Image (tube, rainbow, N blue to C red):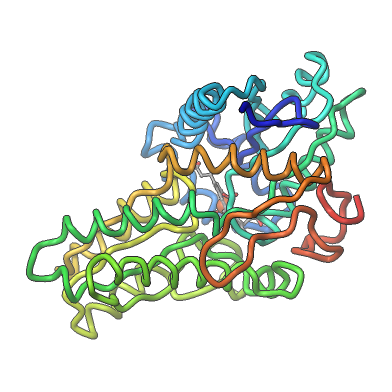
Length: 362
Ligand SMILES: CC1=C(CCC(=O)O)c2cc3nc(cc4[nH]c(cc5[nH]c(cc1n2)c(C)c5CCC(=O)O)c(CCC(=O)O)c4C)C(CCC(=O)O)=C3C
Ligand SMILES: [Fe+2]
């Protein structure tokens, strides 16, 4: 039987956006950091990361490939829904996409955001972006944000397999004793304190994914690898505390402790964003090499068919909820499946409240 996506008549992939050529880099960074008080030196440094990759972020191409995979997955399941794509910071901008959706007669879309966890930057800011886009477009469709999916099996299982594969690639002599460094984007401590309905959800959700991956790797290999949650891509002013330890400092620490090797597992990222290909594959790998510490990096979920299928699962789950049907919500690990609509005060905007979609109050 063909699954029922009603009341949805479209899917919208919502992402960060990135530059595609050198001339895009500065305007992109201006879009990202407007009003954020990011020091000039940090911006110049991050600009260099992009210029080092020819001025082209990998993120848009990854989203194009994900769109193609998602269209194929939906069609394969007999779901005949258009799939759109809009970004926060670069073309195609969300507002333009929502305008096109309205012109195409879309009435209600399920929105999948390329960010799996709670925090202002990874959840509420996208909810504000969705509000702004819908607000700017006459006759905009209803936009429902699909729930956070850090603990969906379709996100966690690829991370388990990627960790096993990266461990297998380490030299035989270091594999068994290798440490696992789970890596995510650093955010200000205060942003973590406000994350989720009760606070600190950003770190707790990552810890729950880490624990689940460590346990499933143990079931496969018989080894419970020592592990830690570490951070990359710290920004902001040096006086503002951000989540630590930095991945590079952690590698120094592991070396000092005599760890034989390490696998970095970038559970904070859904695909190989700039943070992964620069901060981990270039910078952190160079740190490990300098230390003589054998190191590997696990793949991100990317185009894993289980991750692509998770979007379909979340879409059909939410459609059933909206129709008032019973649903089974897939999840794995210590956190239950997340809420559909965010609580009032969840992940507050550090610069003051702005209207946002997908809340219990919106
Ligand atoms: C939690 C989080 C995610 C994960 C959730 C998600 O995926 O959305 C994320 C993703 C991303 N962040 C990205 C790029 C940047 N983030 C910046 C700045 C910042 N990120 C922050 C947090 C996060 N960011 C924060 C608190 C800031 C400070 C300024 C502010 O408060 O907003 C800056 C400015 C320079 C700098 O400050 O470093 C850039 C260029 C890209 C694109 C990568 C590519 O091109 O492949 C992606 C996917
Ligand atoms: Fe960022």
